[in-house]
Length: 312
Image: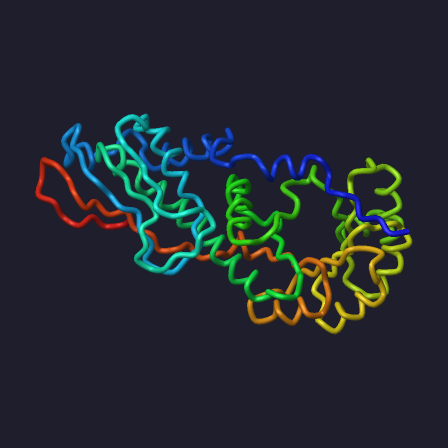
């Protein structure tokens, strides 16, 4: 009997929350500012007169997909600068933009903006990197009907934001955490004695809404996975020809997820072999940051001659 129940209720609830209003994001920003600012921004205090007004533009120096611009206001809010700085986004989240494009226009007191500059750049350039890499994978499998998934291989503390960036890139979220779904892996199988035993045990104890996924690394294990009642079979590090064979064995009795050995050179061939999903850990653990810059274009009086600031 085919089993394809929806994901557990916790997954979509965590997936649809506004990541920029979530308490964990505010805490993340507070920690990042505490790390960077320490006892105070001595450079800005010594060079920028209090109340100095100006305008700065957040721009990209390379083509990218936008993700994370609302973090500007989160960072400024933690610096108590919400009333002295006005942020005007120039692009939409998830939009593909060219090098030289302006992401946001910021006007007001320059002091808090310069203090928060590094933190907001670090966060936004990282999220744009995740969205941009995800879009490349999504484009690579276009027309196959296969969905690109992320994994739990996220940078600690950044999971909610990184998984948001994956969605902005056109990808889909796998589990947000261990409470979102059952994924029986090799160590669980070893502890239970067999694929079938592990799946049957999970199936017997799991709520009806919780779907069961099991990882296999050999075609011979698929029969046990199906006999135990798995909803999804994760094909670990299988070649396209093995994935194709697995699709024939499974038919539509379960969903198939392919994982391992996936990069931009191999993903199309893997998709054409017939899985429903391809999960890619590098979307979050290895996405290169996008080169963004925050540049003051107009400013009032300062206490020292203006000079181009380094980005260190």
